[in-house]
Image 1 (cartoon, rainbow, N blue to C red):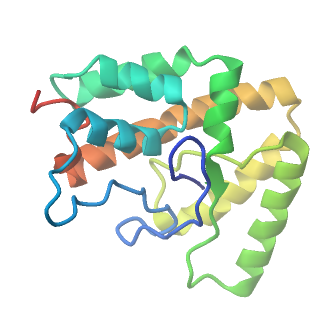
Image 2 (spheres, rainbow, N blue to C red; image 1 turned 90 degrees about the horizontal axis):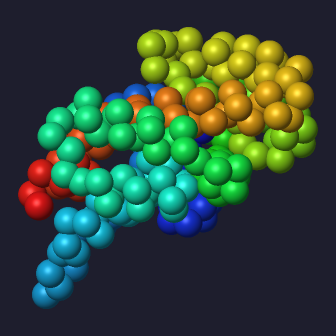
Length: 193
């Protein structure tokens, strides 16, 4: 499980998304303050997109190609931009990820096991473990993360970067779909342009 929060790869503590236990809550731009006009839709979209994938280049490309006619077009553009990330872009995106713990109600042993697994992974590869858990039930998340870390610790660094890049693309897709469904005010797709 991984959480991308903040701007320009700044890390913030993970928060549990109550709609999807085991996932972290994405940070969305705060509403405009009293007496202050809301930022233009492109600025809101840029901040929201950066929370979906921490690569500035990916974000700027996604904003530049708005509007997207539908969610499928948005997700296809996300994939394309993700495949075009340079090694530096990927490092920037991975630097902004943080490792999430198990659901707060999980037993202490689960917290200990996951913490140790994340520490081993981060020590070996130098960045947080990223995995897309789409298609799994929340009660399967912990087992999937532990199994994923165990398997991926056997990878060489180049192989793991490729796997991490693929998982990051999956996370970006999942985060985008969540934003479009639950935060239409972000105007990620550019519908109000």
